[in-house]
Image (tube, rainbow, N blue to C red):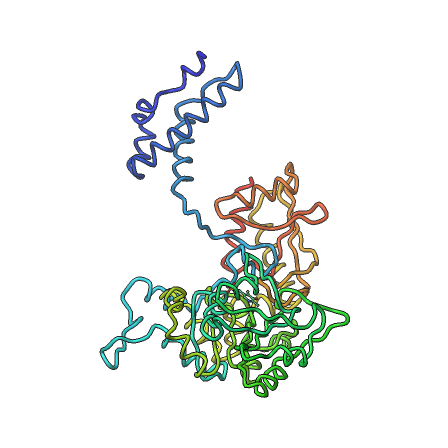
Length: 460
Ligand SMILES: *Cc1c(COP(=O)(O)O)cnc(C)c1O
């Protein structure tokens, strides 16, 4: 009890010179919260031990300053992705290309012609800024962008099929994760799901047999996050388009990951491109902006003008509308696709996905050299071989050979090391495999390297 009495009172603590310095830099309410948090912790510590000694004024003040910093630090933090999962939904999917930075800043910190037609001096459309570019890149007649691909799918279904039936293969009733399930989205859009075929095999005849006066469209959902092998059959997009023409029905494809460059040609997976779906005659194609496209979170709809015009007037579009920062980043990212070589070198997601063994080995050697030069002998780093994953519901099962950085710190178990790095000022996220803490070189951006050095240095 006497020890608890030795713990200073809030008013006294606020008068300490070191705490006055904190008060000069931060709002009083925040400092007060920091002081209370630290004093409460001191009381807890004192209760636990009979022989407890209350720390010095200097130490308590330092703890208060640290608490205030913790309270005021942004919750959303830059993180070093050492997982090797390129499109990591939990880590923010695609890092934006540096080339969009200047444009993003201009639009963010000033007024813009977001919905103002500068030629006419009249109200304009926010969607106009990317429509022509999307049409140019994909070959589609019309385009529209919304918040994310889930919204794109919902808007398209609500606009084309509310109260009517949508025919989908049982093998394509997918769950993407984070509660996006095709049957649920369909339910919310007001369209009625008409499942056809079986889990592993669906034929053209199954689609045809399901058509009634109530049918609104055929929907194809790209199995972007899983792969089916064995005795399987699906109706391809071109075949489904043929069938749609025969039955007088439009065809929609939710492609999900949505790549504009032929990655298969570059040795990465075998995903069809958006252009291929458009060329096949699919009426409406939807995809994400932040998966294989490598841009900001967005949902893109491209296709026939007759199908998209009603979507542009649908009340849901207002609820799903894209923000100006997203639009600036999306326009900037899309513009890079005008030159495929430029897209491959300046869009981080594409760069990381297409990085070959020689490039990764060289990057690994460079990072190891830098770390060895900067770190104490307590920390050992060595390159080892491994595999990375694409992630983000793209190229399922595709494993890319990579270089891993094995990190060992004397006196720390791999688990302790993982926790320390994950909770540092700039968190570094890696994984433990076979008792080793590993960071995948593939997903470490050049701008991450100094952050990684600092994070490892902080371990001592
Ligand atoms: C990822 C994905 C979605 C959801 O896209 P978001 O942009 O995350 O909303 C929908 N459909 C498919 C097939 C997907 O792969």
